[in-house]
Image (cartoon, rainbow, N blue to C red; front, top):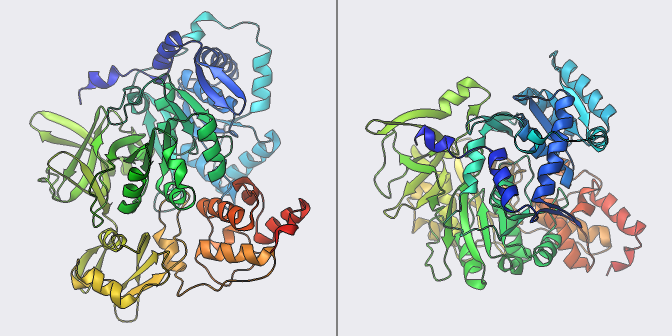
Length: 613
């Protein structure tokens, strides 16, 4: 892509200024009963930018932001960007046993200059000292509390006129954000996002037919790349962004918000989409369009949802290294979907190029599998680690005289004659069985095509003789005959790709991004049906919890997290308990406690113990 094409995209402040001039009185943000017009968003963010500037924040500073969802979060986010500083959003979700270590690791990985938080400033100062001493590192950054910042903003007498336009001279290729991904080591790695990676989203997406009249639900954690789809497609096109008020999603509350706020566009992770299909499928037909991304979803679920309602259903693909949404594919109601193959992720968005390359880094023929590589305006500047950047971001001359920079995704994919991209799995999901190379995701896709199987994870089980494939699957029909499953698989795959073992489980583990967690699955393999308990509320909830986690003999005292839980497990627990016990249990209720025992104690405190029986 020509350099001038990217530079013409402009920066976030450039485009926001144009939107403010075009729609000054239109509602830009909604949070509970509060609203901000585009004009108010612009003026108030200018006030915060000026205050931050006087506190020493400048262009190029890396500013970590950890703020509870509120209008102030977005005002501060835009203020930092207008100063030419680089936003480092940190998660507020406490879904681990050591949130202090999470913050410390992120701070060190991003090498921040400023930390803005609505946590008590003394605690942040203690964290700063802990982070510095733990690895004998010299960490020097300014800690700013939101309370102190807003107090100083309220004391401003006037705002310089020039600040209301743009505070710093920026170009489209300047860095705007650092997103932290865990990678394979569990330690954060920094991905440096450029302005153009986000401003490309200001161009209407033909597949979605999005306009300035749309209303988006901001559901994803702002520290995840998925949030860019919601935040920046909305604000950079003059649409309205409705902020989900909690860090942890609750299915019933999301459904209610979609209805009352007339949400037209809903982005969902693969994990949340599966939960809605299972627990509240009608929700998926309320928006005009639902875009699913982040993981492989059973093709049948797409087909059922597309046929069942008026809303348009899309399968999408995005990655942090390409800043946001990369491609989308509409699943049509009358489309004949092949259960044996994943649903395509479609065509790339404007100013994005997607190619499938062979081992020699040459373009594959149609329908030939290779590695997916991405180029264009969305590409990140790279990682903070230059060696890692050089490994994954490469220059190629696929057309004579045209050198382009590409990101190697490590995803196996194919492109059909119509140009649709289909993801086939990760290149590192390979193993050797009886001397043959086996693509594990291919085995999973075939198993999901079985009419009685909803989802599956295939793990590699090490034995004294040789590794074997162990398939763990979800089925509402209960345990299926292993012999019948082998026969089904053998009719579609070579013998060495047929799993030796099959286990029906009640839940598949997912990581904090909502993607299947094979490593955890290997530890949580369960055999046979789970025993159902009868008795009091605690026993009922514990029985539900065991079904959700896929583990047996759990106790009500042990922490959810120590039992291998993740966010989706707890969201599902709230929803299933609400239906099974005929009470409303929100996700926040579950996240506010640490165990089944404490959850039941909370019920008793609220005089809810009478629901038993």
